[in-house]
Image (tube, rainbow, N blue to C red):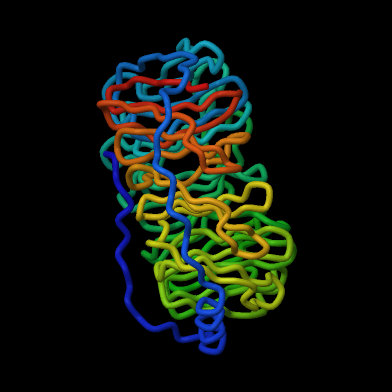
Length: 414
């Protein structure tokens, strides 16, 4: 089913970084400025390149790889994996897993990966991207091994899947062997963040308050850093530094190779969204409504701003502007170097997806039923696609922007 962001909030004072918290407060007081009145969201309907119908409800965002659009449906009867031609919208193939699929597909140039369940049997399948035939499948028959309720990640030649028991599986997604799982990290019931791969290490945070670095080839633990709060946001790698924010409102920087702690920064609100980096700067959004720019090497505050509300989604960076969608229904661009507000636009609703940078446009889902596009340079509303049905977050690729609906309709917008 379609789920809005509904994270349980922890309310506790950060245990670390009190000095930098004081610096942040001083910086916010000295640098704060009144945001300009946001422009009102408006705009004509977008041009529709094509539309198609899967015949099945779609709640997960599409995936575009090459000239194919891939979709999954939650239905467990009939076809529930689809491939469409990105140029025309024609359905190229359908596949039926006979089990419910709760997450979007993960795709490479040659294979499409989907996880589903049939009773207590849990499957990971690799389908041929060209024709939808089964290449390989991996099956488990233990209840906590369900992989279908967590997003999969394809990075650096490895496919990662988290289980309901919060183990992490790594697959080598090539060939036609029936099982290509190469290692697993045993979970202890604590939810994991999405993994990232850098310098041969697999990095992820956990609800057990730890940040892990595993060997990408073997799954062996290379280092572990323990903090006092849950990690909910995927870590970010900037050069040789790993950066991660936790729900205690703290940002931690570690040496990528050794896990040695480099610095800590504290806010007064939980950090649930991934950080963004640009050159020697890293940007942090927190539930205390602040947007903070830090020196990536020292953690020193470069600037801090306060928005009308906090953001549920990671910001994007366009030509030196940091663009944030907040829960007050605003899309705000901050000059990355100075923190000056470049522009602010009213979305006309609550953002239900993060901003997606598509050429010179910022595109995102607004409420349950709309997709909006705004000029990245000015925030000017460009167009708004509205549906009577629930729409998925948009996906971009092959020169189009694609969304699907709870009625099974797939639309490519120009």
